[in-house]
Length: 78
Length: 363
Ligand code: SF4
Image (cartoon, rainbow over the protein chains, first blue to last red):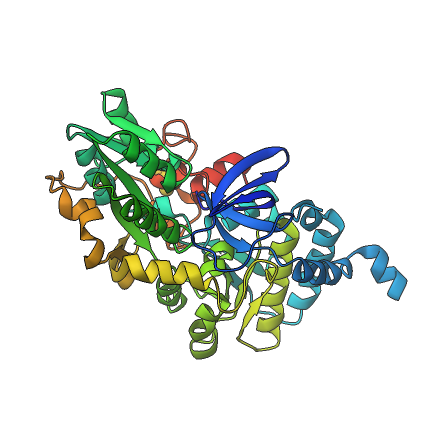
């Protein structure tokens, strides 16, 4: 029930967006998000509402950190 | 990039497993971390996270499934309302099969009650708009992730001037039971895997008291396997280094302040109340009820029904499971009398329930 997934924004019409993940499209409301949302953004959708905008810069920072955990990078730095 | 697959990299997951093992060797005493979000519970079972951790690092599932912590009394009230004439019950799917004291909404529907599953509470508002001669009652359960959506649906109904949309609210907030369980001497929790999407609303700052005053390390953690492993690694590191602070592993979605708009919608429509948690009992201040200004939308106030006497399910250990005291495998009914097809308790119904996750993915 709490499931909320990152979806890409396809279009915006007033307070409603259409977002997509793996070919599945969903409408979602912008009623409970204060941030500006644009087409192409990734958002987290829960129960028909956008609850957060995915910060792509932060995502890349986390991925960079995670990469250091890979065995090949461990041998490279050894 | 879709922000899911990248966080499922097997090498990263195994890299963290090795790192956690190495770190934990620096501390001879075992450690235990609790997750309080059903999606984490699912993810931990689905990706076999426990099997990747050394013996000294244990994960415990807590009261993270909103359907599961909803007491029988609420289900019984929803059932009583579903028996009223000209009434449509609207709900998220998981609530349908949760057994109440003597029936479930699914059984009531088979007997003719109008019970409809919706994806969004706004769908319930749309049903109310289409059925002006009936009353439409939405079953408002869920934590801080879900409660703002329900609050927004009440605002939408107000905007439309709808008088036939009602909410039976049993929303709960998660930080207080976390505080309560952290002081349980039997559990000895060394840190929390803090919920991801609850934190998107309330912000990582909400756990500061827990970490800084009560000394329980907290890491806000995402749901993908690499997220969970990184979150556990951050917790182990805090314990080994003797630190206790809030860290935000899931910074791509969660900010320190949270979603201010959602918080203000919540504060507008709901007020804080005491709430009963299955297995834990009443926790003062841990619930949200519809505020006086919106009392006309409060099904509990508008629709007085007589509710049957509450009966607990014989032999079901959901209560102990929700407090992290036992695992599903300790329940004698698990996979015998109790399966997802014929659940005895709520923890076997919702896909986020600990018993359902354990049944689906095994050890
Ligand atoms: S296995 Fe079934 S009966 Fe046992 S605790 Fe879980 S839900 Fe209750």
